[in-house]
Image 1 (tube, rainbow, N blue to C red):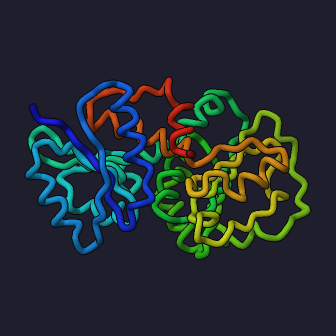
Image 2: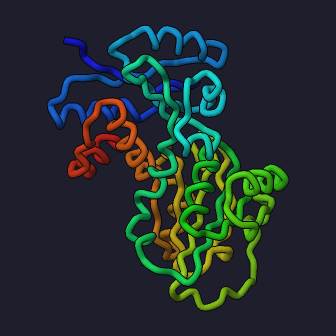
Length: 285
C-alpha cells in the first residue's frame, strides 16, 4: 500500500508550521499519510519538481518564499485563481502525473472574515500594507468582495501597478507605506454599516524585522486589524490595536485556513476543524 505524503518547500523553511498542522489533522483522522518540509534553494527548484514527479506517493507541496512566482512556469497548468493572482502556494500532483498550481492564500485570508463578509455593508475599505506575494492574493480576494483598497508600499509605483493588475475598478489608491507612520487629524465620517480593515501583508513586525510603524489615528472607528505575520503570533501591531479598542485577527487564522484547503487537495480529506483550539495550543506552545 502506498502511503501518500506531501511537504512544504522554501528557502528558508525550518520555521514553517505547515508540517505540524497537516500531521495534526492526519492524526486526528487516523488517516495514512505524512507531511514534511524540504529546503529547496532557488537554483534547485526545477530539479526538485523533476524528482517529485517520479514519486507516485507524492501528492504535492505547499510553496513558500521565494518560490511562489518562480514555480509557475515549471508547472503543467494553473488554477484560474492562481493565474489571476500570479502566485502559487500549493502544487497538486495529479493522477496523470501532471502538476497543477493553486493559490489557497486568498480563501485562507478570507476565512476568518466570513461572518463579517456575510453582512451587508454600504461601503467596504481596506488599508493593505505590503506589496509582496501575500499582498497579491489579499488584494485580489478583497477586490472580489467589493472593497476599495488603499495599498501601501515602499514603492508606490509598484503598489499602483499591483492594483491595476489585480483589483477590479479604478477606485483604489496607492500610497507610500510611510504615509501611515505619523498621526493624522483626519475626522472619519460615521462608519455605521461600513466594514474597514487594516491588513499587514508585509514582513514588518516579524521576528528579526523592524516593527510596522502605523499610527492608529489612520484607522476608522470599528476597524478590524489583521496581521498575517505568524512569528511572533501576537505582533506589536496587534497589541497596539487591542489597546486602542480594535478587533484583531492574527496570522495563524490565515495559515490554518489556507492549509485546510491544501489538505483536502493533497489527501482528499476534510480537515477536522472542530479541533482548531487544540491545534492553536499546539502551534503556540
